[in-house]
Length: 572
Image (tube, rainbow, N blue to C red; front, side):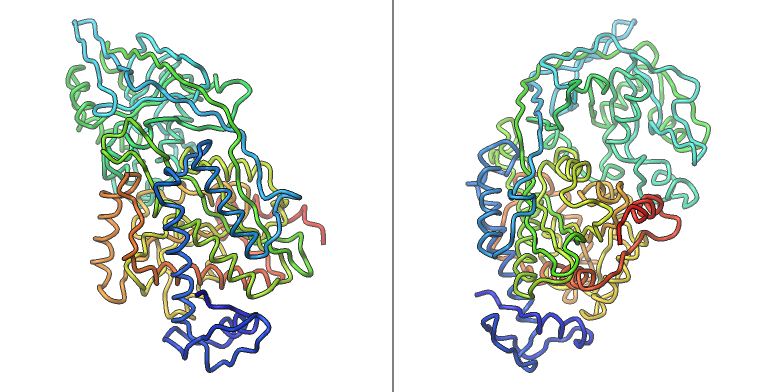
């Protein structure tokens, strides 16, 4: 049975509990009952949240929900479940008279019999096989897309960064051509802290940026060479993610300005093609990480591909619930978590075709429901608290992008965004540390540090900043609008087993389960660590919702100017 929290309990937890350590038990009590401080126990509170996480994750990640792909029966089951839970908790509709915010999406599913043909004047004929050697898709919302005899050009990392004095497209016109490029950025490749952000990935290292820039340069197609370490995931993640329907926001122009084809190839294939062109892949890769690199055509090699697509347009849904504030209801703290995953993919290699997404992100969605319970039992605060479950994160953060462009609450009135994604990463119990994605970016970390001190924990940078997690979840769309956003990731310093063990477990999850059918719920998970993270966010949100503070980005952060601009639009 869940533990009932009263406002008295919350205020006591926030104001008078010193650093962690288990306290006397917190007994069940009706909301109106007085709670004796001697009966409080953070251990019981953790257990109650862990129970929430187990209950909701087991349901959302079940085979019945089919992997929760947008526009499927799995979506209907998911959003109905969320609304039922929010209603049972006594929350209000967050979008006027509706629980939903409609998000128009179009899926483009490329026939898997597609072949990418590489040809050369010397009689070269190499056909790349779908799934095993290459993956290809298109964001153009058209039934057929063809690229024919497009010259291959290696453009290094495919980056134009004026502030870095870096331009991989300098001196070449790639209109109509197919650019081939490396994943991540030169900072990671060289580990030079003065180059880009050194080991920490910048947005220039993300595959989304690389396709965007190639389209801006007028390329017909773009091919990214997959390498496991700089990509931060194995080839199976690429093949699993790019197979099946690819969902985008419905575009009136059918996205005709975007690339005709967006592709990945295995590194072994890239080495072969470079050798055919008389080029040394290793040497050119090293040269591409140095300033002044100039693009190199792959001799006379060309690429051709024809995509036959099945289109389906529908309306997916963000789910929005609210606990209205008592004094400043127009000012909001927003929790977010994406409810979607990859769905059921019939062409997947595994016998199990259901990508259940238990960790990613049934756990985060479960946390959203647990937080709604905690806030409801604590009672309303002066400011409103919004619980936003977004769609289509796996398709490019689409649900949060739509919300950021069409906010239910004006963004200048949005105090902060607290995002939850993939809480499975703490299934191994409690930790001494709290890993912050984008550590050092915003003043929200000051609130988090106070909450951490109450748990006898310390903040630190995420364990793998080179993997670019800051650009891979829904908080990013709030940040791009200037709203300070906080996103926690895997804490690795296990109180039981230590940090080396924790890092090993993180690697094991990424290589064995991330975006694979094996990401399934296990009742043996120890979710007390995940529960502690949920309580951290509850603590931060409670601090903000009960104050008049407007946290900002740190000096020098790229989003600070946007926040200050939105502050000028705030009415007293």
